[in-house]
Length: 191
Length: 296
Image 1 (cartoon, one colour):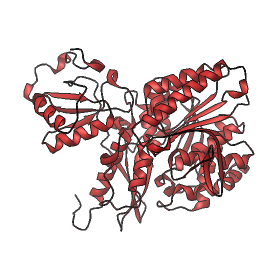
Image 2 (spheres, chains in turn green, cyan; image 1 turned 30 degrees about the horizontal axis):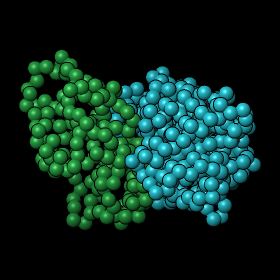
Image 3 (cartoon, one colour; image 1 turned 90 degrees about the horizontal axis):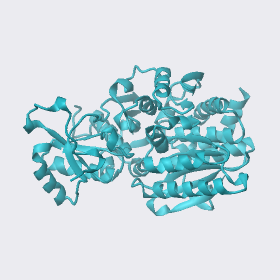
């Protein structure tokens, strides 16, 4: 079967000889929101998964793929099916995959802390842990998420990936988690 | 050219539908084609800033095409479709005043196919409109490989690193060596141009704002400094809105960028915001901020 986006092509030679048990694969979905749901479902089932930028010839816009343990593909598919998700295609990892951002920048405004991940910034009142502003981003779900999150504490606010649809929401999720890490609640401890 | 200036973006409400018409801002708020639009952040903040600045400059208010889209992309797709059709009609029409003289693209789902249809239609107009892109549409424009067709992008620091990364399809995937704190904005702007990721002009928002032409810094706007502005959702939108208004009023592009950057900084000085201030509280200060910026 011919797969979309060039998936399923032979893996590059430099990857040959690797232990098949550690081989990684990617799953592509019709929409970014499905990627977000798939990642959550697979993680809940114990899979070590990551979201990645698709190789150049797979890119259509605001998209990403789920990287997973290729040898466990049948199990992964059952997990996804139970969650009502069906990948468009699955294939071995090949060259050109991009890592999500992993660097955070924090700005201490005294009463407030701002955390930036990629193009998203989230600002929190340090004493009350209330999210006071969300800035940056360019995808349409950013304003929608801001309406849900601003004015709520880091515990009350919905995690961006619960409602988000795009890569901007993913970046906001990273900033949100980092803010939670830096400003743990009364029952938590700073990591 | 005397056609209208059209701003294209979204509001975070899937039930909003599609609204196309004139913008108006008064004490009651912002309206597009007589439909009330709350100004909290995003495209409504850009529209409000443009309207306020146009009124101060004596320019007519812009037109807008607004789609309801909370992130799934369906509303944006409708906006792309309608805009491409409208531009194609304008290209065929005899009335050159009906064709837009400028387009400002904003919060739209970054969809390559939609972007390409719109850009092709815009470039097919008898007189090429000025093309300004920010937010999600800027991401699509960069990824399309046709960034240089645009007259202006307005990135912040994170977005500039993305423009400078020829491999990144979205800021989320910008490679680490470009996102570190030690990165120099002027060098990133040069790299963005050299790798085809930049528009002809960039207005880079940061500790210092940079006006860049084809990778070379033309001007640097340093102050006044109001650090809290970076935390406020919508302060980039007020900047893009004021640039749009200055272009509508006939200012040359580099001058419009420098004046808007200065005005946006004065906006911070006048409003004295904290990081918790909403952008709607800044908009009333735009006329005075512009007046002071133009007097400098």
